[in-house]
Length: 162
Length: 162
DNA sequence: GGGGATAAGTTGCAACTGAAAACTTATAAG
DNA sequence: CTTATAAGTTTTCAGTTGCAACTTATCCCC
Image (cartoon, rainbow over all chains, first blue to last red; front, side):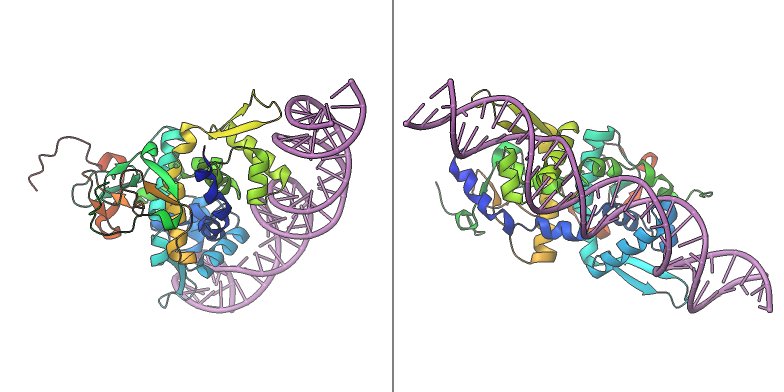
């Protein structure tokens, strides 16, 4: 385990993971997100579906709104109702949520969860989320290593023959 | 209480996401995992790198061990030292961790984090984690929908004549 | 082999966060 | 005008987090 691997560690603080967790790291955040992906839009819907305490739900929803993951709109048709919808930023969490859920299916529950996300075109379930190379090849763990940004080959039509 | 079946929503409880969050949903879990992916193996390394309180770290490590995400081994060479290493189950969280980190880069920090995960073969950074169809096509949000398991077309050599 | 350093924890206690249930406020529906 | 609904707040209490100091076992050196 050369120092090659250890060098990057001093830079761990510059990782975006803490920033992501700042927004999504709380207990109910991902469950609320999943519910939003599944078409829930209102306070009472989340509350009864998730069984979350009302004060916590109110707090989490406003937090997600603050972080721009949900947007909050009062409905003109019924001014009691508030609609919470995913923003583009929130929808961008789909791969993360799916990866986590698929991991749970494979390693925790052992069974597929419902509902299933499927391709409109052929009606088949999506693939497991995996890591892909620049050129689209799927990559397994032993085809990968960590590198400092300055050592990363930049995107360009490859002409180096090494 | 629920009465009419409301499409997939009634089945939200059968989702594996809560199970996954049971194992990984706590505040420091993903940061410890990231550190493990980056080559940290010992209590004091995690402690000084992450700045986490010692009692919390001890608690999280044993929790991750209980869940089979890390394994705990005493080193014969120096019997003071305990080595924490990712199990196969733990390594399977790589796509999730990357997806979350990439989301943070794109939507929170706006900058790439270090270290970068690169392909051994060409030295280039990996692609953003995305959703892929059964046949490998990348899928965007509007090419997808949720379905109940019984409505999902099963894997089989496609003879789809459209 | 005694003294100090190192590794991996534990313990005690204050501050903070989470949760259940009841209460509030605004709007709508009959 | 009364009652129901929606989206919160408030109150209260339990549980969690975090710092600092303490413990135990092991290693390293002279």
